[in-house]
Every structure is written in C-alpha cells, then in structure tokens.
Image 1 (tube, one colour):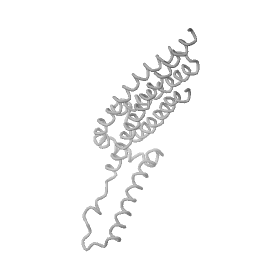
Image 2 (cartoon, helix red, strand yellow; image 1 turned 90 degrees about the vertical axis):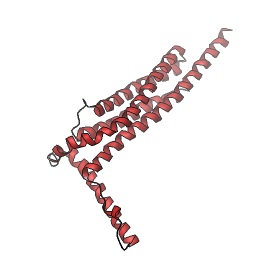
Image 3 (cartoon, helix red, strand yellow; image 1 turned 30 degrees about the horizontal axis):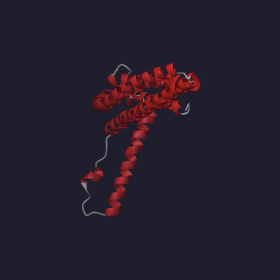
Image 4 (tube, rainbow, N blue to C red; image 1 turned 90 degrees about the horizontal axis):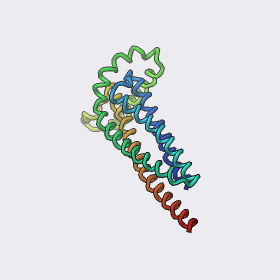
Length: 208
C-alpha cells in the first residue's frame, strides 16, 4: 500500500531531473529565466519539488492509516495534475519560440567557444551529429550507386537548425514526461481513494 503511494515521489524526482536538463540547455545558449520558455522550465522544476513533498505526505498518510492526510493528499494531486497538463500543453506551444530564440542568441555564444566549456560541449555535440549525417549520406551513395545522386542526400542541417531541433526535442521530452506523470498522478489519486475507503471500512468494523 505504502509502496504504491511512493510513485508520486519518483515522479517528482523525474520532473526535477528533466527540468534541470532543459534549464542547462537554455543557460548554455544564453537564454535567461525571464523568457516564457525559461519560466516554464523553472515551473516544471518547482512542480517536481512540490510533487516530491506531496508524495511524502501520501506515504505518511498510508503508513499511519490517516484518512484526513490521504484526503488532503488526493486534493493536492488533483491540483498538481491540472498544472502538469497545462505545463505540458504550454511546452508544446512554446517550442515554436525556439527558432527566434536561437537566431537571437546563437551568434554571441560562438565567441565563448574556447572559454566556456558548456558552450564548447554543446557545439561539439551539434557538429558531431552533422558529421554522422554526412557519413550516413555518403553510405547511401555508395550503397545505391545511383546514376544521379538524389538531392536529399546532400541536404544537411546547418548548426542553427540542428540546435533548434536539439532544444525543441528537450521541450517535447518535457511535455511527454508531464503527460505521463499526470496519468500516473491520476492513478495515484484513484489508489488513494481506495485506501481511504478501506480505512473507513476498517474503522466502521472496529466501532461496531
């Protein structure tokens, strides 16, 4: 019983980890926390902390067989689930902001390539992916030996496009994680309701 109510705590830890990774990516390209995307990521991390504490409350309620604590736990989960769904939808919408954000911040970070290890690491990752795409395209040419090489074979992503896809992928990952965790939260609410009913039945039998 208690172990099932620990699940929200694991979800909270997962949200904190995912939000921290996205925040690291945003900081690397010089995006501050005042932007809409940065604000959403901070909200995800904050929500993860709250879910972690809420999961602890549910665990204590189940362990102590305290119906009042479990009712409060269920109410908090309902509010947090609504927030998770809203944040997930916001993440899918705000990923359209990434191209303009990249255009604004990409050029300045190249000057920090040698001095900033985080910037160097990110650009190296992007360049490595471009190299992989190049090798894959060359293998296609060798394999098929077409008389006329298809035009798509030599269509490579620019560094800017690759970085856009990288950051948009982070936001999509956050949104998917939020939706999955919201579903888990709903299941936890149902389980908490079952535990509350069982506690009431036990108390009724004891009193009779």
